[in-house]
Length: 301
Image (cartoon, rainbow, N blue to C red; front, side, top):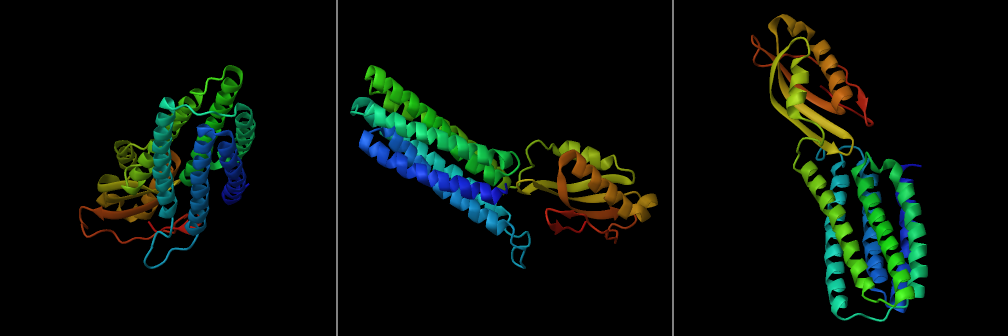
């Protein structure tokens, strides 16, 4: 199933459960259900944003946006993280209020709605799991659904406790724990998205190791102005000035070809821009090679 179809199906499921939990929370007077319904609303927003970002990401580059619309995916993921943080704060506030003023909760109705939500969230998580490991936008949506899944488990447990013990305080306690889980995922998403927007080195890539790999290619004497960053999920880029040995200057195209193959294989860097120089030609070597096609686009090296 394509990423867009996965997001669309998860969105439909989430909308259905949103209304079920919202009205179920009102009729059962359960804070956990109402909070989870609020979280479902943010999921609807997040999934909608993710679908829009996926749509714009495949649009061709323009004169103004030379990299296309790839970064919309990252902006969407960042917004999702911020919204999740606000939801967690709201849950903390409501849970705090109910700790001191426990409300009557209909545990039976609460349990039935929570179990329906649990099944639906499990289905959505399974649908989104396939592409979440290598797509940050899909991962943001997946985290939303996972947090809902955990929320549903907590609500089910709370409903069982209320039914068998009458302990109403469990409702805000479970809500508070749900908030902590949501906040943890939200902060990670904000941190990861911000790193990409700040053009930090991709996670798992050490710039010193990359520099050593480049220098190990025959003909490369040195390099400077090395930059490595992530354009969008799964698309890493690099730029650098390469100092080519004078006696290897005529091999510059072959050197670049070997270098690109190593970077792709070792670091999953598929977009590269190198300026080649040599001691006797500090203004730069003039050479151009046919690039490989990556992610539906071609890049000159």
